Image (cartoon, rainbow, N blue to C red; front, side):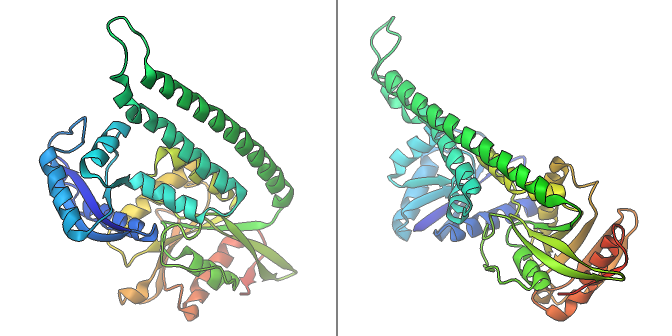
Length: 373
């Protein structure tokens, strides 16, 4: 679908956070492409205040309307959070589909959900967003209320009926999710035993799955798109030690993203539960992209919320150096007790460095070993 992307910035924010703004603008265009939207034009507005009814002024809505006609766009996507009332008013003004970054992310989660667990979480997120939108969508019927002293009208009655229906569905889904979570924890407990587990994490589209395939010789689909991996996948790597051969479990996890919609926070966190059982974390970083330091911060903040940032050893993998002509290398950061490796996951000969560092970390739990891939 052809679309316009509307970037909203604020006067007090621009100069101090210019690089972050550029990173977020590029990210939205990438998200739109992954969700099946073709960005025909990007429009930027700087706001000093927010219009409570339409978020931006009518003059700016008219600018968008004219641009949409010129580009034959069918949708407008805002890089901002809109209230249900604002979204409805903008849609009525423009006579176009209106989306926000949060809805685009939800569409991507829905597109890539495979397991019953992830599908349930996405369905729950959709219902919760629909519930939040009810107030704005039924505001127009509130005007149909009776005269002074009348406490209810058609709009209010329909609103309450719709809300009750959604509440029933939300309660039912939450019960199903709770049962699935209990079964998953029981399964993880039975399988955990003493197997050393390595979790591969990183910002979405950073090359995690490429590294996963290289280390495990798997053939998981690698795609240059966001959230191509939504459900975690595990593979066993055979490891040879001085006395015996053992196995190490390698986990590929869902990609991180900034400003995750609160309705999807629960689904995202649930998909990362495997990290809680990890003995080692490989943090894959796309160092060829602008703003990768901000992506690092997003991942580290989420790992901190999970309680593993300071308790589980982390090896930072600076990936895609082939795109920026940086030589492969590794360095130890003693003040952080962390290793950093620069490589290209597509270039197999560069993997021995990461093999040896993983082996040294596993050595803290087992005898000295070498990884066989």
